[in-house]
Length: 174
Image (cartoon, rainbow, N blue to C red; front, side, top):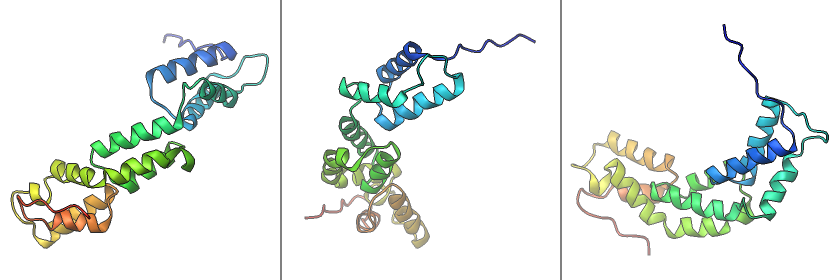
């Protein structure tokens, strides 16, 4: 059996290179970058002279604007809205990505402004309401509402889209 070579333990330079490679490949938040660096230090071990300081590296990358939580939040919320997800689902995703409330303000405003269009995209993708072939039976209607709720839309929006007859677009909230 071939002897599997383990990568050498990390030091300051190797950790910085890993972080640079990560932020150059992925849009990320401070929390996600910190989790990645901590995982790498745990997996490979630490061989540097000073103790490992992933948090200091994340802070430095933030100062250099390699990592921008507010910009990440706006980008991520727009991507989720384009896929048809509602405000609750967007907020849950941003919270899971470690975005602080202060960094989510612009993203939350964008999500509120795009809520109806996101619901339209979701209904179109799932062939619900005006995009369905025929009116649903009561059981199917409940499934459609549940799908809207799982996607993060509120109940009133879900009802308006699921109750719309095939081919008839519901009117947006005033």
